[in-house]
Length: 486
Image (cartoon, one colour):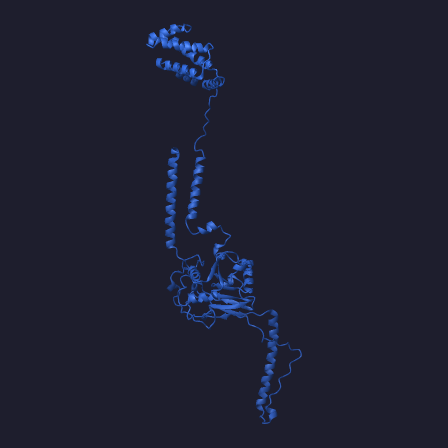
């Protein structure tokens, strides 16, 4: 642990600095970041200028049933008890609509749903109005949205007068004026005929023109003749008999027109029936955005769009980039420096592992251990003698070397008697001759075959080592040096 203390402290300091730098950069970036109409974020999670968080929170706190829809629109058909009655799409979207998603959404509307699309180009999101015999075109805003600061409401509405309702409808209930931005779009409704209807209409128009010309000619002739006062002349002439080859006239008395209805001036708000449901188009997201929701009667218009408290209103978050297909953990920390902190920590860990596992110098040979040392042999023999209880052999191994050293120390022959060796050692060192001779006798008796216990063998061995230490014989030091040389 102490060996790696410096490394641990360094890693902690580096991680702390990274956290501080990430936090400082994140706060600074968030303070300077300004939403623009060129790249807006219309999500209900966004509390910025272009977001719709204010509208969503107001609906939620006012008792409306609202939810954030984070699944593909096809799931609207199979949502069961949680099936929304109103589906709100606020452009621009981050994820484009697939053809299958658009078909599923329009099928949901056909079954009775209410689709609210707030966008300057709704026809680019969904195939709106093509199936009803009416084509809805969108006029371009008069000003370019490039670099428009969405947080400046005065700049967004500069030079644009509020618009009033064109007629009293449910969408304009309690609405006197609506404040659009100068980037709002208007809708143009154009009737589109089918080819066979166009051919039949052309033939009818030609026949009607001929009949009209004949009637006008007949009236001109009657004007030149003096009028009679008889009752017969007062009776209008019978209408001309239809030609046998004339096409049958179309009965339009029972046909319900699917034409969209304009609710505000400049045609920025229209709606039309689609099957059993309705489609509502609003041409300016500024009206429901956080910056513009509080101006004029924009909030009341937004409340009318969702059509009552009883309906479950779903805001499309799937196409704003918050779909459930994303990892929930990553989605929760999206827009914060936490993900970058984890990534940098992982990078530091990988660098440390790579550094510790990589060699930065020439390869060195592994140390070779001498397996044939005397100490290893002695250790093995001592273990065998201990297991066999051959304590006499242990005493013999030690006493034999000590006796030779004592004889050499006293200056006598190695085969001298123990009395001579003890006397010569005592004369030279001043040691107790009798104790030394008694010790030598006990060791020789043990070597000659007398039974001794482990405690006795340990005592004799300790006394021999003590004599060696007192006399300075240092037998073990010399033996260790000899073993190292070999």
